[in-house]
Length: 420
Image (cartoon, rainbow, N blue to C red; front, top):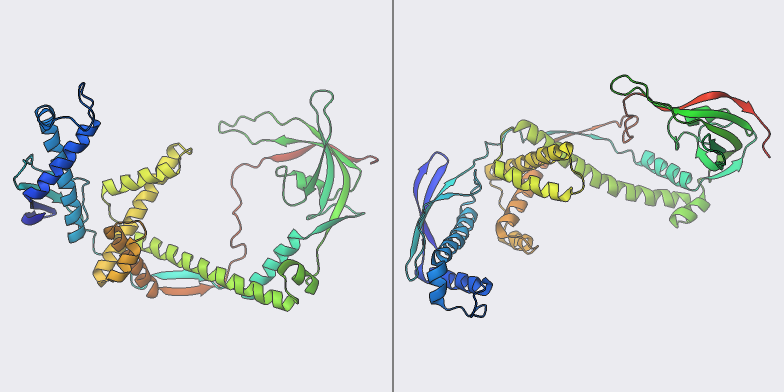
């Protein structure tokens, strides 16, 4: 295949392609063979239909499929060679069909997309919380202690962190059996409000409560839950293991706690570096998208959107559709901005790098795009202005949900009764 650019007007480029007769004939033979195997004509076995019958009945179909095959190959080749981005999915073309034993000459007009010159990619500001190695070790040890906690009976009122054994009976049909359960105060295992009621109670305390719901969107008050009677059987307080050499052997296979802390510190440092890298990339990409606003090619967004929706099967709805559209648009812009930065800075992978990347079951052009964009992101990160800040209290905690409060409400004051 050879070509020449015959006209360029703004973002539209017309190219005249020439496919050699020998290659055209090979395409005809391949298309005829495939159609002949697929056809079912009485009196002939699949794949043994005479060419004269194929040409008389399906000649134009064969020529059209050869044209499509040849043009698709030519489009892919010139896009890879010229490193073009299309503004529209399919180039416009003339209606010329190929004939055997002749060169196939045709013209295609490409609408090209040019990403706006990238802005604000040097000196991107990134803020990262300072890594407190000793604090991270202490928090990890606290987590280990929490996993190894035991509970012992306590002759006192229940407090936050205690394990309270209760018996619950819902006032429904006669014959309902009481249900025994263990509640860790502060975790709200049965919903908000119940743990606060239980705090300060001792073994033998009894009360009745029900779930109270907030008004609906019209201001109507829903029916309250059915009353449930609770009886406190026992209060147990937590007993945590000591941070000693015995714990180091049990939890970390180390002889001493000092050795265990050192091992934890190394692991946490590695994990922090990984998280730090991801956070830097996230902040840098967000800054690039913020500083480079433009509308990407619609077909690129739609292609990625379809892939995202395929991955999110089973989660239909307007929110899913909107999320997939917004994410696809952002990811396409991210790809285009990094590509433009690579072009502006002359970043190109080596042939050796391309060969290694292309070997991962991907095309050469896709491998080049990935490598080039990776280089562009590394370029941005290498020139970013990174500021370490003190971690804020509560960092990493799930924010409290807003909205009308619902939860357990006492409907009969606590009383005391003997526990057998």
